[in-house]
Amino acid sequence: MHSVFSRINNVSALLSSCMMALLAAIALSTLAFNADPKGDLAIASIKVYPGTARRYARTKQDLAFVDFNITADLTPLFNWNTKQLFLYLEAEYINTQGVKNDVVIWDRIVRRKEDASINVAGKNKYNFREHSASFKNVPPANYSLKYNVMPYVGYLTYGEIAKTAEPVAFPPSQPRV
Image 1 (spheres, helix red, strand yellow):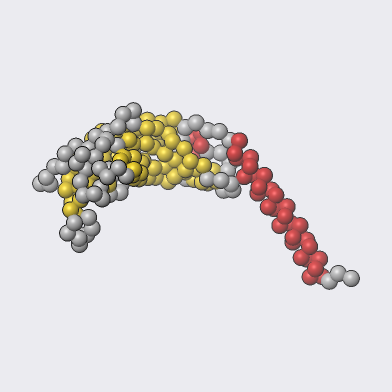
Image 2 (cartoon, one colour):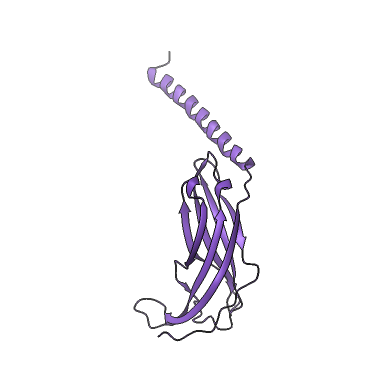
């Protein structure tokens, strides 16, 4: 009555449905997981220098160099379903035209719980430039340390670990020597 192929099809459909139900249950179980990582962020100094927009362009733009200190304990974010963490430092400011900018200036990927204790004194990894050519008259920026938990199965979760207590002002542009 039923061919071998239709029976194989029925069995594989049942196994696929069971697998999807199991993965959905795993994904929903991670929603109940609540972690509260602790950290501290301090901006040591900001220096602004004139520069060019691109390698061969003649457009002048200010470049900001941010020195920061980060200490964070990310071990509460690791559980059986955590594949890796994406940790990043973000600068948030409003330029002179009133446009809100969120700029990632540093990041790190943490893959193991043993590496989840972060203590970094560094400077921005990526170019931090203002597209309106100058940081002059730009209001102070807020800096925050944020994370993204990437699970094996389930939803990506985002959060904030630390934030500067007060906005940090951009100093006047210094000539390069």
